[in-house]
Image (cartoon, rainbow, N blue to C red):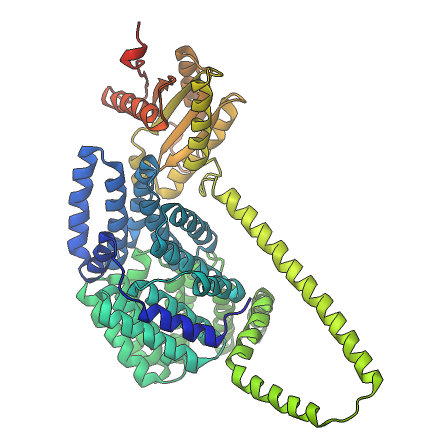
Length: 622
């Protein structure tokens, strides 16, 4: 499927000319947070404390969503993922699709920032599903644009354009934020394929929207993107102007990561213009911010630029130290482009050292990565040809008209020519049918894959909240029909934050994965479990008594600590608390969950590492 240049113009017009629609209050809050993230960090924290004490999970989830966005705006990237995880926990409890979609959208951008494309794709799929469930058209469009961005960053231009074409045909929005994201992505796609004129038009449109209608953070991003476009076209004076604007805007809202991005690109320009001392000073300011934010791809780019400058200055000893550091970092990333550039620089280093053999080896490795990269983007190149053909649409139309005039001047045609033409049409038709069948097959595979993702937790591979709640609701229906007895158990780890703080999030993730494996082994065939979010898990137990609950609790607890978990001290014991509640015919999921959650809270209050049984509701006693 193609998105023609004419269609883009129509979409741009429609997006910019629709009458104003009533926006949700949280949309305006997001714009305000973009201009004053520090204020909104304070405000969101106050909301979190208030709604937590009120046990208003829906509002609490939305407060976490706004806090995650404000953290991104302020450059406090190290806190974003933990904030999102906590917010998702409450959004799941409240079954709030709006908060879920907002949290997943922020999570998708967080992973894109770090080039973790598989997790960004999963977050985008979750965001689209939640946005659909919410019935909020603007939220759905935003999630779809995020998904298109993931496909673009993965090199799949065709899928990105397919999503945008679908939005053009079926969806409408007057929100400036969505207009900004649409124009920015279209501009990036055309910039990648060399259509710089059209790309600059869209990226300028995005900048004007941000300047006139959005907050400072959005404006800094638009300024940065426009500067990048000018740099790609060789217009360095204009690139410098907009990078400096982006730098000042980021400083105005204390966005350290935004400052680092702008300084790194200014260092590139200084290097191109021969001002290597200035470039090195900028890079030395920039690198700590990328490290602190765990923006490893940008850290690697900055280190590569620093090594390149040091080699240009013939400072070989310093260059060697930077190259070694960079190589260690890039080995942890799945980025062929960075590896190819690294070995180009290593080859240059050995060449300056006079070691021709090592220089040649590094050069060959660089070529191998280049070939790998070309293989990865082979399909993308085909799509780029399609996009280029769209750019030349008017020229193609003129050529067709000329050929049509030539055909009209022909009086006689050989029968053989007609036969050849017929055969060509038949073969072309067969090829088109095969091509369409292939794309439909790929689309069906993608839909099945996303359907599976929608029921799995992307960290542990265990069933997620949606899957386990579905099993519980089906079980409650059997209870109402007197076909089964059911109980619900909530498990929450004790002092899990200490594990993350003391040993790192990777170790915390290993604990969660270990729990998923152990629970799968310990439960009976008819039982189900799933991750609610964070360190909270749900068990759906059929025909389980209080004695069964104690056995299950003990079995899982003991099995958790039978095998050493990598990263934890040998004598460290992982514990958790469990709340258990038996269902009645009058129970809804929310009512049953609340009874189990209340006794879980009581277990925590009474010392943790314990099971607490909920009494039956008063109507069932006696």
